[in-house]
Image 1 (cartoon, rainbow, N blue to C red):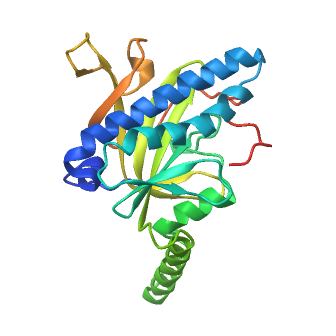
Image 2: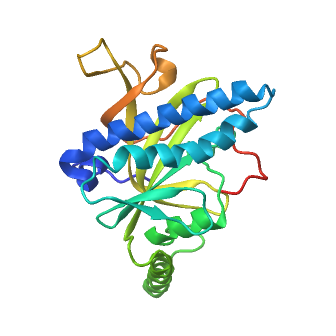
Length: 259
């Protein structure tokens, strides 16, 4: 559950750079979509495997290229066994992931997980177990859980060279048919089924330039589906909701491709 806080997530984590970071993140998603659509068209395949696999590789590269010039002191973070890098800035690393449109549960976003992604998200600690009428956590149980959560987070941070204290997940809902729809950015973890448990996040809203030189103006509606069809860009809105959209079971990377 996303927390209700006085300032939005982007402002609290990125300060005066929040707008520039938000714009860069949506631009990265838009360009990754364009490259992925080109791959799908070029493959001449009826499935979306070429789209999903290209998006998986292109998205983190586009994020790195756009954020390094914006965040003073930011550096690329190589990942052992991964064909891409992440951006790290002041102890914060940014992990971009594509939402699986075919997987939804109670409005929560779902991604294709891997051992690496689970380890990266573990920097934020273990997800808090939901309370149950049949299993009320005692103080001692909570204390044990907190210790386990800290141990998991410390082990994950150590594996990254103690360079990362927080892992920011940027979750993109995007498909060949609809293009970029939603970007949710925040601190969270993945459950065993790949659903993201955000406990502090912000949804970025799609916008479009009204005309050259006039900058960004808000588009009516909260998602791409509610707006007109020009290629979108983003600015921050103070909303805290998760993605919705049509299910498309073939737009995620092929299962044989490592993540």
